[in-house]
Length: 611
Image (tube, rainbow, N blue to C red; front, side, top):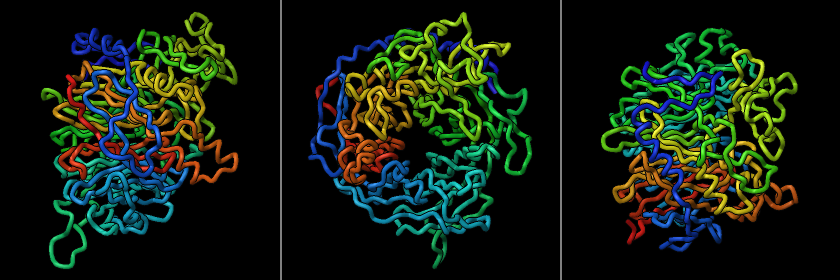
């Protein structure tokens, strides 16, 4: 554990300490946030738009952008707001795209040899598969995530129907006919799976969420699964590789129980027993692994613990959690880091406010620059709401219903009206004065940004208020809309555009982060080649904001027709396809959209004549 990291106490309000590397780049961080957004709306497409591309995709780019992103084609399930397209993975040899249909418990397999016209081949079902521990994946199981190795070995993370029981990792051949090859038992609610760069292991984030009634709360864990060397087994007649339960090792958080928990790592809410009825390991039951990224050398996994606002480090050779740290908070009173905190103040009223945002990333990725590993986070934010326990509250409701009020000497005290901070959703679990009498600091959910960090937990770059500034200019009256409906300013009081997930890709020797905005829609692209001086490149949204699907359905419209006109709603999972494996011989970006049930391919074009 690193003792040098300065913790961020939950009851205090300091910004996360930035050590030498960050102190040295404080000026560059400010410069990055102050980049003039002299933006040009344009579309760069060498190919005619295909199926599922709206008539006028929103495209806004920096004047000196080196690349452009344009939608090529989309596959539509026709299913609205049922998580019919969540996480996506690509297999280059077969030119197949794998899109998770969560509620159906299956993975949609698409032929994308023609990216402008993706077509379904079949669905890979995960139920009915016999696992190595003797169990069978039952009907009602939920597919959450998919990953594919270059040789075609694929894995799907599958959640148990009651979610607090252990889930499965189902094995398949990406170039096969859709039949599963076996399964391993992993932890409770396996929410995300990735494969290490060397292909030897699958790493699974077992979120361990409580039961919906908060009656049971399993431990969050990370499974490290040794993968077979080959997709096919040895010997004649073998359908697949040998699958043994002994291949699964589990990293826990037991080493961080009690006083060993680093300050600032959020453990809160009712103390609820695990599935075995035990109240042991409260910290482990409270921590919920959300997403995983693995270092280039395949030795270390970095795990986002969203509600805890923390990151854990797992040694993959020993399958042990070796470090845990808080991400701290973002000061929204600093110029360039403001937010629009109200849905009652007119569209796009972005300003500095006396509130701190807890980063709380969902997606996390990693890359190397000059031999050093950096972590990249999509700072979505999330609250715990189970049974009778509800963490969030509006600022104007603090002081009511048994909640402590805002401290009278707080700069937020006089800003509790609806047009100021009154409508903003904040956590009730952080920010109390030491005596518990009142909230001396308000903490909102998420950073409305993406960030770059060192693997020591130091903040290197944050996009500040740029996501809201860019979308305000690009979307106009649809600024901070929801995904199910078009309602301008509708999400300003919550988490704004809500950056959900991201992918990292290299184009012409430069590294880019592609960040999906779950509520606002679309993808933000940043050049992160120089981490401390990351720069906005372009924003593209394959969505027709004039179509409000939820409203249209309520008015009697056919859901399939309404969806067809809306485009992509709720980007959830992203996968970058390098030119070397692309059917177009140009880089592609695949995006799974959980609300519209669409899986869309974008082409990445290099712009000539740029610096």
